[in-house]
Image (cartoon, rainbow, N blue to C red):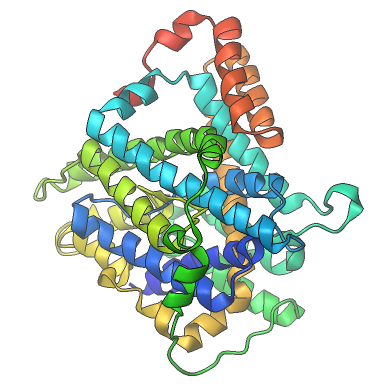
Length: 434
């Protein structure tokens, strides 16, 4: 619960800089959107019965931001251009909901994923890694105008947070120390919290961040949110917009399905240590869960660029590792998940002292999320290919995805896989089907 207070609230609030920068809504309207998505995420395990720590399809964030930038979203965009981007990403969110629902009901989802060639999967993930680093490391826009980068807004704070989290989560020496030293294991088990807390002190000392907490209770303007963002208020996207974001939605679906596979393997591993509780894994139920959550989000709040996904990997690791310790440590995995998510109520988001205290840290939290995603996607993309040809194909697909877009990457990926890797690589079922 304490970890959830620090990490879940701050990470959810990291959506606010995206909403305010690209959709030109106020902080208060963005907070209302975050509350809606937090309610959907926090209650999903008990409403649908999926024993996952739900979250975003995080690798999709840099790809969606790249798509928004292609359509001129940003600080200097006109009201007309901003409305177009809002409707475009609303189409993306509605399409995500439709794909998950259709794939879940028909069972087509597993067939698609099982038949997606490994080079294409690796290329999609590699493209997410490139887009993530490009999002944070690009200093100038086209024409030499200073670009918007959260890393360069607060470099000391961002780099401190990223460095600490990366060392605790991925360092090989630290992994060995976790076995030997209990305090290292405890620190690493806190996930993103240590880096986030230390970055607050670094930002304050360096003068990058200025904290001014206020007292009171937040009163999010849900009516204003509805009027500015909901397609039931501003109008539904055109068919052309749905066609434009279709390839991006397919890319996000492939990434999201990979998260389902990851979550299932972690649960199967935990079940060995906890035969006292049966953990029900049902792919159809999970697809319906994701389709309904994305659909409600789109109809009530419009565009949702981070996409409702099945898994928050870092939190799922923390919960399942404690779950393995036995019933005295965690009676049920649903109790552990619910405690982390405040028993389904995002209380933190209604407390003005907390939201105003964390407000300067939100760009840091988003930058940290994007860079850690880039690192994780990078090494995963290198593991999936089985030979040098597949690695070259994956790299090419990833570069095309990051530079040109999803349509071009999908078409080129299929053609290159057939020509460079052989038709048998397209026909074979991948390891994810096991």
